[in-house]
Image (cartoon, rainbow, N blue to C red):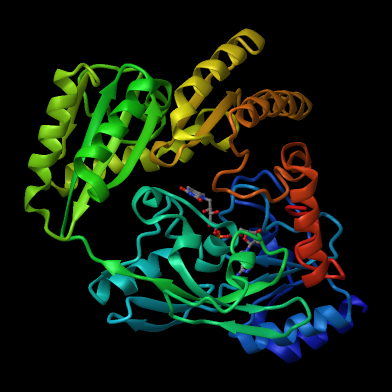
Length: 469
Ligand SMILES: Cc1cc2nc3c(=O)[nH]c(=O)nc-3n(C[C@H](O)[C@H](O)[C@H](O)COP(=O)(O)OP(=O)(O)OC[C@H]3O[C@@H](n4cnc5c(N)ncnc54)[C@H](O)[C@@H]3O)c2cc1C
């Protein structure tokens, strides 16, 4: 279908205000958050509800028009950016922002896919409940994007990934049919778990338009600590000790290296090391509970024991919310600090927690000998075995050199990850960033199964072409 006809028919479906046609208006949609990928589109379509999404998808199906779903466009893998052909329509969910229902008895919340994560959290809070998914991008990313990437974040240790937080989905299929799977059930053994197909599918199988989410009792209080540690093996030792002593109350356990904190202090206004000395590694811990009175004492005695045992070198416990927030601000400032300090080659990897320290020792040694001048910035959700094992190149590195080093570093780091039974994409998704590497690390059988599912649901290959597969 020719572009003017496509646009005219789309404008009948979503109205003129539902289309973005001019280059200036399209600019934030055709470039990713990191500024790494830039594409083009004939039109950004912004439907208001699942019925409009269905009509748009039916038209795109009939006219064989490829579609790129987009939420908040905060993804780290280029999954929401169209290619440069200018043929791919962007379907943005940013006008679908309705919280449909909160049921505090069933502990569920049903919302449109375009609702910002922070607004989902707030709606749960207003009902005296907790929606625990928590990311640095929560003020900009959307529920649909979280589901499509199976986002992780800082509360996975206690509550799981986005997949674990979804009870049901509403999805518009590539041919425009709507699957309403918005069931608020904790038990439903009536066949294949279809929602799990779409969660983590990065927009390659259909458009998620709504979700039924699990809510949890709201914690009445938290206790937060910042800890200085000698080695990564000891960080893992501290995690084990904290889990044994505090059980489910341990809701977050984040780690960063000394170099990572140095960058934050240098590049983020007002950032400072909460401890008086520099340590090779730091851990940020949080306990929470619906009955919070014993939390500070529990944190103090567990960390006191760890100090006596020589497992940690120093620690400070936040005395109030403001101190806790400044500790969390250090963790949240990492992305900004990295962007200001250099061009990062990012590795979003997972290995079994028991093998983390050995992996990092081996990877550090390998990179030190092969790339001696490149600093590693290592941080992550250590409680989930998820490291952001990044390598910083100079800000002015030439594009060809950046591409060459990226390929060499990826191969070195990801081969070591695979040898330790790990994953090359723990939480950010594959997108276009890791697409070509996937074949190296997935077995032929696994790739074949994924391709069969893709062909069955999207036989014309119109959903987010060039991503994931
Ligand atoms: C500062 C910062 C911190 C971050 N921290 C974390 C973190 O701790 N953990 C983590 O996991 N991620 C993190 N991210 C990455 C990102 O925020 C998440 O991947 C988020 O889930 C993406 O949501 P989005 O709405 O921005 O999706 P987008 O970027 O718009 O899209 C991401 C992918 O999902 C697809 N998609 C989007 N909406 C839909 C839909 N409705 N239906 C079908 N497919 C869809 C897109 O096609 C694309 O493939 C961070 C990003 C930033 C910028």
